Image (cartoon, rainbow, N blue to C red; front, side, top):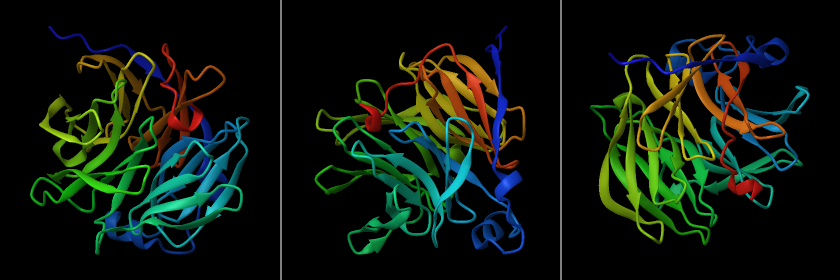
Length: 305
């Protein structure tokens, strides 16, 4: 009989809604997606800058929060957009996967947000969702839009460090979070509406190869959202709607279940803390950031190499 993986408990680090919840102005994004335009926030994209501050994006309200290691929260940027993912470049600037605009540039000092890569040739993106850097500075990002099992229009792109844009894979049902393997030969992509994690092999130059298949099939909830990886090559999958971050081995064996102490809308996660063993998790139904102490440190990110 299959034994469930050990459970790791979480605790609340900060409650964004307690200090920055908004209900007096409607959110068009939340109204269209959930039918709840009074949604106070919808947290995503946790990412650490070079100074150890945690940044969060608020898709519903176009805000970026900066959280100090002590838990002090400020609104560091506020613009007309729908920021869904965030990653920091080695030189300190941030790149935002904005569902409405495309890939945007963030100056963390001034809070200024400007267009960076908002078109694929002469067409707009469907709705960019999440992003991750390779060690050479190439940026991989998902273009999810409203794709699903019927409308398989989702895509994964690579924006090379020299500015060249490549299509990695198309005709996907709701590509969301993504993370590279330790050797960067495989790109793992969470397909939310397929409730699965797919594996895409890459050539030596980082371009797509021909072999694409499922690595992990989830059950229940809504599906995989944000992803991360640890120093042992294990894959972390945020299971939105299930209230869990699953930790899988590189071959797909379930190792741990990191369980939400708040709601079920676990959208994304990032490693931080003094030894990089603390997992910071966005739980969007409550507007909280949760933390869990993990046995293996997170993989060093491009921004901190």
